[in-house]
Image (cartoon, rainbow, N blue to C red; front, side):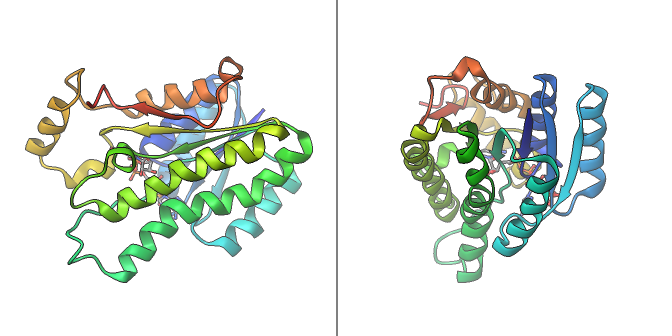
Length: 241
Ligand code: NAP
């Protein structure tokens, strides 16, 4: 069994790659800029006795995804599990956000998922099995001021997830999303200690999450234990009310 994890060099994606390896998957580890970090993730996967395939690729680039993923499918077969995790964030007032930032956010978070599904779904359909897990965000579900363009991209992830689940269910392919709350990764470096404390206090459990919290949910959705679950947006957010 093979899993492809986008943005697996750091944070949530790195934790997903290792957790999937722990669950018996060989892992295609995608990264864009952080090669050293991606190699460390590959070492962790191999230490668990699984195969790691490093894949440098800007997943927002349709042509590059098409070329690189065709080669991967040719060499290793279509992945059984696709985790669309790669993403970027941006905070700012709508008055200050530029057209270029809007385009970058939608390409990085939404088009990247489309690109990888275009590349890998045909192989899953011809095999009549497969599983896709998209990483969304609670801001896509509940909205957040200063984060409207990020929230828009994640709202798109949720709609795409539910629609694709309906389209691909008859082909034996499950499509779900995990919608994290505040998870302590590099992406949260823009928040002050005070902001992080306030976000933790908004949860029922009184804490922010770890990459492992998300990886556990992804591994569950990728497993046979979730064989009757599709089209769902699973909030993993400590109980944000
Ligand atoms: P992170 O620590 O900033 O890591 C982002 C990862 O995405 C890195 O591995 C980065 O690779 C990769 N990446 C970004 N753009 C890419 C591209 N164009 N092509 C290939 N890889 C790319 O972020 P994170 O917190 O783990 O976030 C992972 C996902 O969870 C994102 O979709 C994010 O929106 C979502 N999320 C995060 C939180 C949170 O609080 N952290 C909450 C909700 C949702 P390189 O470093 O190699 O470039």
